[in-house]
Amino acid sequence: MSEFTKICALADIPRLGARVVEHPGGDIAVFRTADDEVFALHDKCPHKGGPLSQGIVHGKRVACPLHGWNIGLDSGEAAAPDVGRCGRFEVKLEAGDVYLKA
Image (cartoon, rainbow, N blue to C red; front, side, top):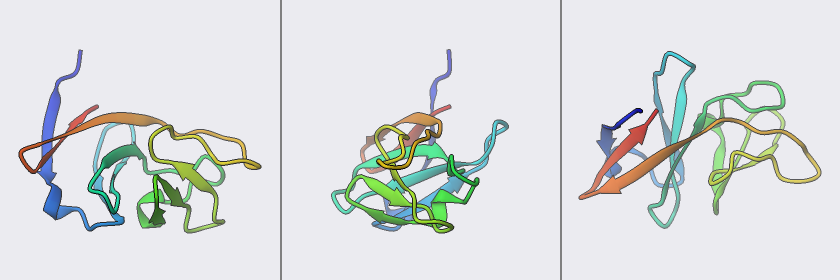
């Protein structure tokens, strides 16, 4: 079973932005909301593979920069009427540092 790995400080992720972590199964986008919550998804929109890390974070969603699909940061699910899903990863925040379980 995978352990959590420290990937960065929370301050290293821009508020309402993302940081990309390289992973053998594909890049992972780690997002930070306005409320300093962190979420991690495969950096690939389920629609056409757009880089979600370059999208606009609003609330607990990210809008894909290619076609505007909204993806739930907490679920990886596309918002209706769109249908699709991208992989989600566990993250945690401890003492100002972000940890990823991948």
